[in-house]
Amino acid sequence: MLIKGKSMWAFITTPNTNFDPPKYEITVVLSDEDADALTKEGYNVREKDEGRVINIKRFLTNKSTGQPNAVPKLVDSDKNPLDVKVGNGSEVTVQGRPWEVTNQFGHHKGFDLQAVQVDNLVEYEGLSADGEELGLDDNDNELEF
Image (cartoon, rainbow, N blue to C red; front, side):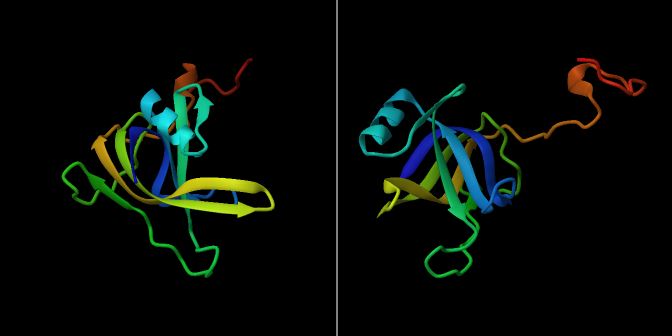
């Protein structure tokens, strides 16, 4: 299934290791129409400050077999391979393979992250470590809050 929207917190070719277990993932800000359709189909669409979103992920290993999962593909709008960090606000089309499971926690549906096509890139620039966002210069050693 293809899901279009704006990317948030994209870990496409490098896994997110901030939480256990590590995983490839992207949060997609959806149009209202797509959000309504996915909600109606039983997918977990959440409300965030950025809008209605869905998280699409792939674990590093297959839970059933223990074998490594392939790294999701990352391509540009012409389907050429990309080697960039995708920043928040990039327009993307995500290919996800639907999955569904019922267990002791209930019935759940989601998507396995297979590929991301970047339609309009906002390249991730990271955060500076020098206090620039707070208006500090190199001579400021202490922060006052």
